Amino acid sequence: MDYLSLSFFNHVLFCVALYLILYNVYMLVFNKGVPNIRTAPGIRKKIIALLKADMAARNLPAYTIVDMGSGNGLLTRKIAAALPDAKVVGLEISKQSVAWANMMKKRQKLDNLEYICTDFNAYDFSNVSAVVVFLSIYEMGMMGKLLNEKLKPGTLITSNRFKLGDGWQVKEHFKVFTLYPFQKNLYLYEKR
Figure 1 (spheres, one colour):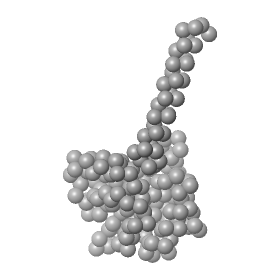
Figure 2 (cartoon, one colour; figure 1 turned 180 degrees about the vertical axis):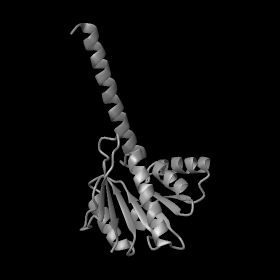
Figure 3 (tube, rainbow, N blue to C red; figure 1 turned 90 degrees about the vertical axis):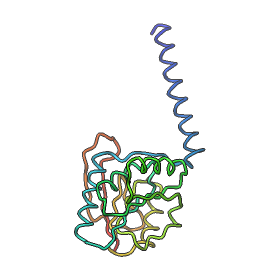
Figure 4 (tube, helix red, strand yellow; figure 1 turned 135 degrees about the horizontal axis):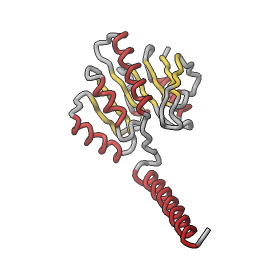
């Protein structure tokens, strides 16, 4: 390798390392260490189809969907647009993510969508019909326990990528084709 190509290679490595460091600092400082990872389009479509089918089958007077850790709100906006008769709630601990999500909600004029900046434990799940989850594998044990304690029987739960912990039994497992390398599994549960 000549000097110029080695210098270019080192410059690229330096830029990548600097980006990763700055991204991690941003996540720790502004996002409470929680990354915003988009749900793959194929997974989003499958979640929306499952929610539509559940809403039609149960024919409840009110159908409320909660996204646990809604991040910047892309998934919740897609769900709210696809199910205008449902109430969609995004729970997120990051104030910056909630501010962004609310701005995008207003731009899209989604009146059936609400974002709440809160810890999951503080939310009242008594009127929830369905829950959408896409959290890290480390959070799924805690999430399984929380949902076991707070959800009423019959509540539908979809979990992207990781299974729920705390003894939940998968009702259905879907292999979804996506271009996102780590999002291919969608798990469906029902609270008993």
